[in-house]
Image (tube, rainbow, N blue to C red; front, top):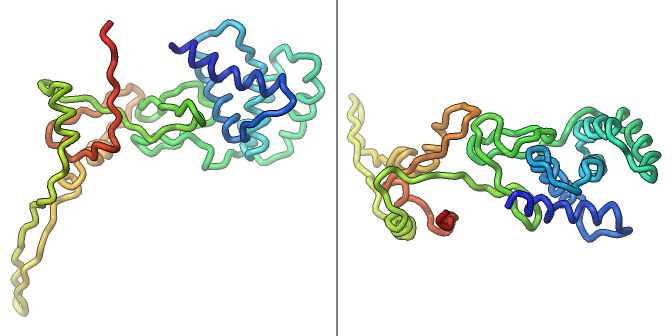
Length: 240
C-alpha cells in the first residue's frame, strides 16, 4: 500500500521534470514532492529518483519563499549524481539560494492538528515531533487534513460507537442558578457548563502529554455523544 502511494505521487514529479508543461500549481507540486521525499526516505522504492524529488521540491520552495528549505535541499542535491541536463540549473539555483533570507514562511509549515505545533519542512517523518500524531494527507492536493485520531474505551463496540456518534446532540444544558449575596446586593447568576463539559473531545486534546511516542486519544460514551457525526471519519479495516 505504501509503495502504491509513493508511485502514485512520484508520477506527478516525474512528469513535471520530463514534460514541458504542467497543470499543477506550485503549492500542489510542493506538497506532492515533500510527501514523496518523506515516504521514500522511510521505504525505498525502486525507480524513484531522489534527485527528481529533491529538485522539484527545491524549485517550488524557492517560488513559495521557503528559502531555508530550498538551501538545505540544494546542498543535499549537490551530494547526489545530477543529470547532465540539470547541472547548470542546479549550480545557479544553489548559488542564488545563498543570497536569500534563511527562513520559511509560517503558512507553509505543517501544523499538527492535535497539539497545534508547527513542524519543520525538512523533517523526514510523517509524525508530529512533539506529540507523535501521524499526519494524514489528501491524495488530491496532498495537503494535510485536519484530522485527529481517537480510539474507543474498552467495552464499547464499533456498532455502539457509531450509534452514539450519529445521535443528535442534546439541546438541554446543565445550566444552574448561583446565588451571590453581599452587603449591598443579592444576585442570581446563571452558570453554564465548564469548557470540559461543553466539548469533552477538545478537552482531551488540550490535555495531551508531550511525548514523541504517539498515544491516541481514548474516548468514552459521553465524548462520543458530544461529537458531531458530520465531522467524524470512521476507518473500517478489513479483517486480516
